[in-house]
Length: 337
Image (cartoon, rainbow, N blue to C red):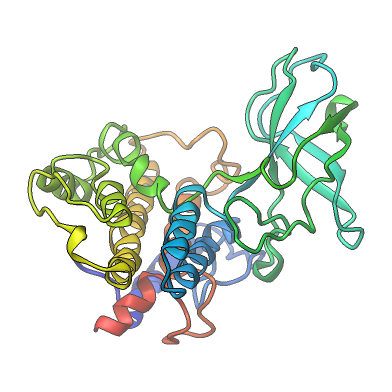
């Protein structure tokens, strides 16, 4: 398995940046990811390393409870792609398309107004709706609602537990209620990078199955091999794969925790980085259409997927090129090489 070192990645990303400049003026609207300048909004993608940091912190407790909490973060997420599930007092009076702007009041008066967009299509008559919290391009303050499985949740920028949601475009005022502890969730978690592999790396359009993914899926005999192995490690059980079986009952809690930390990075996240870059190439070469929900498609086809790949590869915790402050593949490559 190959990773990019700091030097190799730097050259690689410089070429990618040069290619973008050829098409249009480089826009510096978003915080850089080390020396890479994203041209699309990926600050909550970059924050996936905060999930890993929280998992690692739980493992360091050296207890079974710590491993159990770490597993919940792995499966449910904590810092990336926050979504609120709200229960309306009355059924919707009309349809509201996906991506429509909505507003409400935050728990913290310091935050004031909460903005978001409809997570999916809201149909007339619905009483339960999903709202994606708005993401800031400022990495240090990208979102102020970080709940999900977070052992130290941040509620400041979450919707108040009972209030009125406004939909300016449709002149709607929707009284609602919800539980801020259980109804604030995350639609991105490290588990999902393996869980959705079949649909997004094998049975997709374009150059699918992606060759890097196909090698591993065929060897282990299943598309979600990464999560299958990780689940066995969490449970202290033996795997039942086509090849490369492992018996985690032979390891204590510390041994399983050490394996889990490395496996999440080198199996789930690494393959998801590869997926994003393959997907970006497919879009750029016209093999697939841009996702309908990708607001950057018209201006920069494929660029959002590429930026996401870099975001997952590097994360938020590195302070400078070559630094060893982070937790993602960028740091692992530097450590190993």
